[in-house]
Image (cartoon, rainbow, N blue to C red; front, side):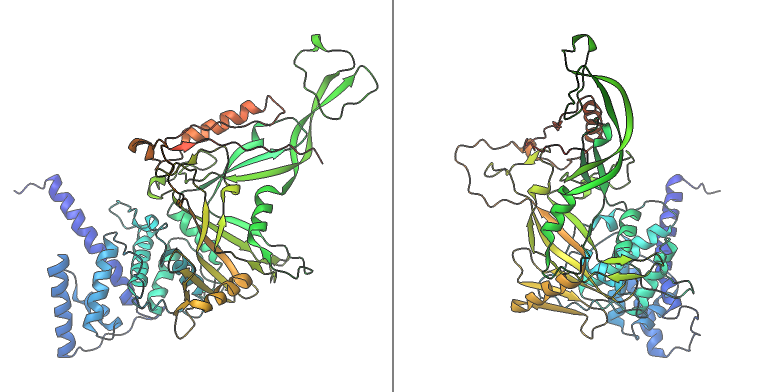
Length: 550
């Protein structure tokens, strides 16, 4: 009797998994373009049979895979029996099945984009174009593989998204039946993309972004929140919040005639926010004279109270209004504010080129669920100096060449625009900048246009920012920390070990923040955190005055 070893069993499982991957692709071609009906098989011509054999031989010779001829037949049928296109598809499938993601297209590559499926898939096409055609920051979401033997909906969606992105970047047309396949796999992964009657519907592109980034564990952006008020200090007055995008409200004042500046909206969001109904302890005092102090006074010992000083009689929890300050901690974290870790490692996402997604809330909703678009235009700049929004108690990166502190600049890399009164209707398009040196050229995707992908350059670039001002919905800004300073003579350079700052955020930092926040509750004065100093960084301080209870 032959003995089956553990290695034999592992090889068998790997072979089964490889065949399963190909049958995953076969499932799409069996469905073809119809959602409800499988086409009846037709008798093959000699030429068609020969092409099936040729394609099967190519797969066995190049990919070491032997599968049923019906897969190759359906693949050829989807390409109108074009053998060359079918071989390209076959190579794309093999790359996607093995976790390979192609680099963004070189300048001058002809791009064909994706066809719209049933007039409602523009939110998918536009979002994926903005996230992947020229950006690589989100690539690890699709290349960090699930090693489980059994195929899961999450794994199937990840494989199919790799195939979508590879076709997009290589300049191959993504046909409507492929988009239909993607919608089915999204649905199997728990995305709700149908209306109440079961028809495919247009959905909110920002909600799809949050769904994908949560499903594939995009690391969080940490923000430090500080509350200033006249009540007693509390540990929650200084804490860390985590999110994957900034949602900015646009004023709906109809009297606003001039376009708003995105920088001003950011300043209001970060530094000019009032929070009401905050429950905090307030000290009530008794006085030795009729005079009343202008602010609460904390006394450590009643034995040393001088005359006409306040004595704390009791404390009471009341609702106060607080001034909220928000600051970005300029690195990714795999731990959220509750201390829960995600599967994705922040090490896969370089802090030197973070992406800050911004969602502009352009819609007002009524109690019936209806929406009205806010017509206020917002000037979208190609770059924003971002140091003023970064936490100044965090260690600042120093240029290893010249020794200067690097200035954070956010460059607009891509955007999703929405035209219409509701994010669940209307039409989505996308823009992506071709290079990072200037605004010389942009790509525009409109899956309902006859020319789906257009190159916009020269003076026509003004039309890009004109459309962004009216309809920008999701903005992808890249936080760049590159340096253009002149070298400083005789300035000591950091060592090689000091240059390594790949892991900027750990659970230890979150614990440190929490501990320092609790310590600060013993004092009513402004407390500055002293972050753990990392190699190659300098320490900075910020100074803010408190806000009285309103």
